[in-house]
Amino acid sequence: MARQTRSERRARRAAQAESRASVDRAPQQRAPQPARAPAEAAKPASDGQVLDSILTLFDPNATPPLSMTAFDRAYLQMMITHHNGSMQMCRDEQTNGLSTEAKAMSETMIKTLTAQVNSLQKFASM
Image (cartoon, rainbow, N blue to C red):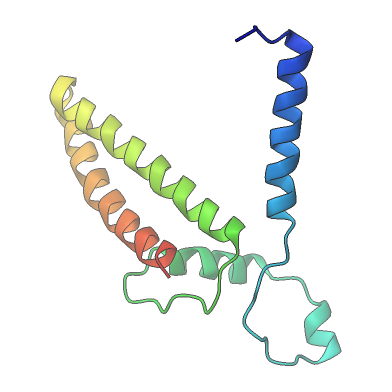
């Protein structure tokens, strides 16, 4: 098999990226939304509403959303991976660290992150 030139590799990567982007642009099926009054539809979400929706992800008793887009699922998966990496750093601190305070903090963080990962996985599996 002949080696590809740099420009051929770039062209192949660009074609792959375009292919992925066209899949992402495919119409998503969404659950029907209740009709809203025009004034309500025009209002952007307040910081409090955004924070409430984010905190819902970490509430083990929360009801999952009715539908999610591919973006939502990718976000949840990214956050699961991120939290798992944080837990690994905490375990490394417990194994290799010298500070008793940092070890205690890492123990608390592992418990919190574990609960958050469980909630994220629950939502991602919907």
